[in-house]
Image (tube, rainbow, N blue to C red):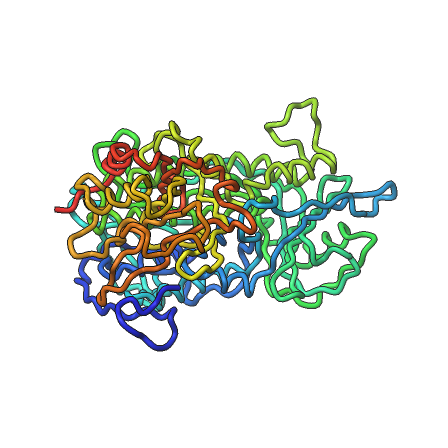
Length: 633
């Protein structure tokens, strides 16, 4: 954490100085509807920009306290680290290290049939963890409230309609009813330049756009319990999958705190269109079914803080913004939907909350870039372009994975394969590991924001279109061991990782040195072309150097100025942008297959690798950013 840049401030460093910027409240820049995972991530991003006016509203009258999602993928923890929240999450959460599988023996009693590591080794520096969704959301809501804009969530504000004017220069109008308002009182109207509906599967914003969730129900019911129980089942503190001969079973998720567990209990098929099951089912039914699946072990609930019934369904909207397909290219979107408002699926793969947050992590920096004048409105076209295919892929994966984990034959399996046996379930689980860890998302090569792969061989460990995979390094200025990916912050800045050639830092032959000079001085350099007058040199592009030499072989004052910038109100030097390999353990050049001739890895504000280029590919660097950025006047 860097603090004191603009002068010494005592007290809690997480409480940012109040920017005290007054906004015209007639029209806000962004209205965020819903304080679930997607809405909270977006609010936390926008809150760091006090020059952007944001309102953040929630239908519930108070913050959520119980239930709903709990699995936090490795990729999501990486994202939380960009908000400086990973340490809080990891302190409280329960870490999943292994998944065990149970199935019936010849007598029908369950026994352990196998075990696998929960996450592939080396996939991320962060683990897969479990934490109550309510706590996870509260971290983000609190962060927004402690931001320079002091953004607060307004509870008890239910959206009842949205008007999208034909004149796209006119503000959107969202009609809201505040809790406790009399029926005779007129609706409140919030005007906004952009509206983001993160308001769940029954989204008012989605309905206002005339969109619907389309898809199928599997006509199968599950009960879910958060339970404090006494049991002799030996793997109650493991993530466990229990299968029976009848293909039903239980998923067990150990929860934070050491005593609480979550059970996902198969309650069997229901009649298509049955609307009564959810209202007539009871927690006692769920407990009774669970006890049968646990045979020959005992299971005695002592307290059930939360329970629910759900049906497995995979549904998706036709688009995730307000622009019909026949109008694409003629105007840019102003209304967006994210998370459950645009895609719903089972809890089997644990992806709902995680993918929802990635939706708005993708959208947040794009809204900031447009509202601050860094990019044209057309940048917002890329939200639907990138995220709807991800949601579609998730639906397809979830249909396959949910069926397989339930012991059914997924639609994508050939008829002759039958339903997967216990060994098959274990194999499918392992094969799906990268997806369930959240690191399988890939944005297409050659799309608006992703460059071509002509120079991918210069950095094979950073595949273009995938998330930036962190690795250990040593910070030059203070010899501190560090993870390179941890320089990412949720601040809408681009990261330029310059992996040096073999020339010494002080050599006139250094390609890295020449790149540093070009970035600082050339009119076509993105740093010169797109950084506002008077702003810090790293306000838009955060450049970092990784040398091949060890940290004792040269001094921080030997590096180009772009990597040792003077900034802030006091003109202080930033010493935290230059790194060397951890030569005593793993050299990042070997670990991430960086060519010894050097490479520039361009990373988007949402941590996805956008391009890999030679250090001296100045024209290509300039051309890439010219595609979607607006030069400063």
